[in-house]
Length: 134
Picture 1 (cartoon, rainbow, N blue to C red):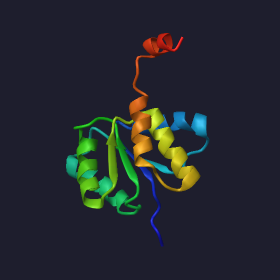
Picture 2 (cartoon, one colour):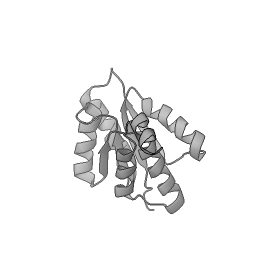
Picture 3 (cartoon, rainbow, N blue to C red):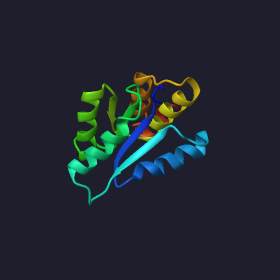
């Protein structure tokens, strides 16, 4: 049996689940995302084990998205990405997650460059951009 391609969110305190709820307002029910929240009580080895146990069950074509580069979720994701070949992106935001969800739901695969571009393009000075386009 083939392993499923998933979007894995590793975030501090679990804010990724709220982000998924927001994305569902735009795209409908999302079932391709799994969050593993880092809670203050978890040790690094405990968190690593939790993430590794889940990622062992999914395809290496999956993607791991983390909130902040250099934090515990990012460091755990980097280790697992290095071992599995999964892509790992930091700077999780709504456009990045929406792009990944729509791709996976519509095509069954992920365009990693498009996902990274969607996340990067979302960062802007809104007032300056609106004024420039007027």
